[in-house]
Length: 282
Image (cartoon, rainbow, N blue to C red; front, side):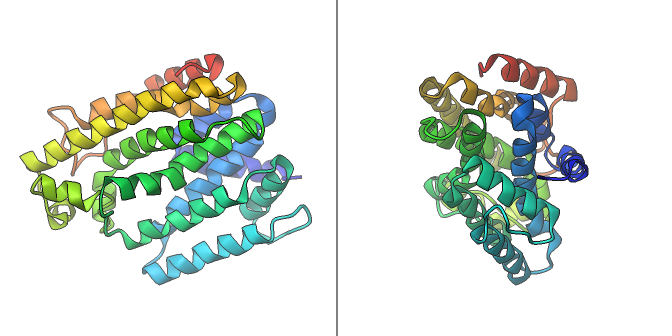
């Protein structure tokens, strides 16, 4: 069993690195909170790796460590690392699909490369493995196996994940990353070098507007497929209620998307997540 002090540590780190997921876990039914906190802390740790290493090869070593930890996942496995041990225990106890967890690790190689995606479909494939898997695994924790959430989770992953990437464009650019579809940049007359240099332009604005619309379309699709998910599992999609406020923030006329990280009022975040967690309605 995971040490309660370790769980408090995971939650404290999550509160700083991913406040949306931290609140989503805190507002979930009590029996599911430790498992969700562990899962979300794992995702936050994978995201942190690309910022913690000086070169991609070092990041790949850390990602491989996580693969090895999960490949040995069974109840008696211990790595000595509290989060890895908590994750393997959770995966065993909850029967979490290992391919989804390993896919989350594999996808993070794109973060280390930071050279962008060939096109929108390639970006969506990345978001399926990162944000989509996180939604699917959350449904599994809340509603058990066989909840039929794959379609809803993938669409939700694109909606939430694309809003997430648009919000943090300045952060990624400062780290030398362009986590955008290169074909779409070209269609709007924008070079990756312009993103890295923080050069605002009409092309950048139209690019962001197009991607925001893609996120909205995916949000609509996720809502349609959520009807196929058991009521208990729909609470896993609570973070989707933040997609539209985030998209409004990144597309405001006075927002400088390459210089300012778009955010929303913390009380708005809490109230929206609280209502979604209570009702399961997104």
